[in-house]
Image 1 (cartoon, rainbow, N blue to C red):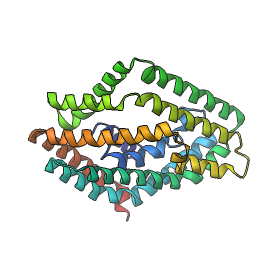
Image 2: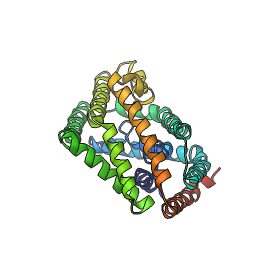
Image 3: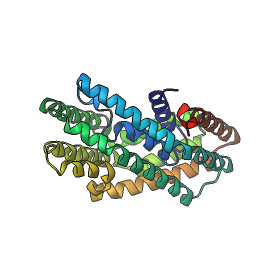
Image 4: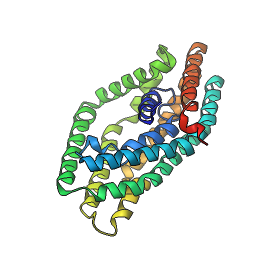
Length: 289
């Protein structure tokens, strides 16, 4: 399976999984951050010339190869742990916090790995490309604000619950009424999360643009390292508190959904995990150890 196909497939799969907001973070963050930590899919935000695209594809392939050979082997036993938790139907908050910490550590490792490449790529942008990036990022924020923040809070809550319901269907099949009720409670607990999260995203983007304005200066490498490796230093107090609440709500939802699951749902989830494990275990890069 090609690296790009694995990356796309895993992102879709993990977002739809039972532990989409907690357990799946380890692999989701690791793959997702290869693409969007900068955001890494810069071709979505600016037009790279032929030379830059060739360099980008080669460097991305190197990073994905590194990730598959050095990071993925640890995910296979991790998937086995997740499988056991699902079968047990019980998971503690401590176990979920451990999974979350593993996800954060995976993202940090990816960030450290790609920082030199990010610095080199961003330093080579010309003024027109930086201008295009600024415009694209502004459009990104405007689109997200219209879709996620402008609707009334009650509509945001219902949309969030509906989206989670849809993401869980491939993994659990049809949900019971009490499971849908748990999802709605989770969405209500997040409250104005969309607004706070969007403000944090915009703040990060503005910090990136400010750094790009000084990309010829010696301090640029350190600025990009902070943006990629130490994002938490840029968080506002409001976002930090919201993130803590959101993570706690996600853990509660995960535990409740597992507790409410029936034998058929758990079997379906385990089968999905087994399929996922099989896909990763057969990657050629894993066999080149």
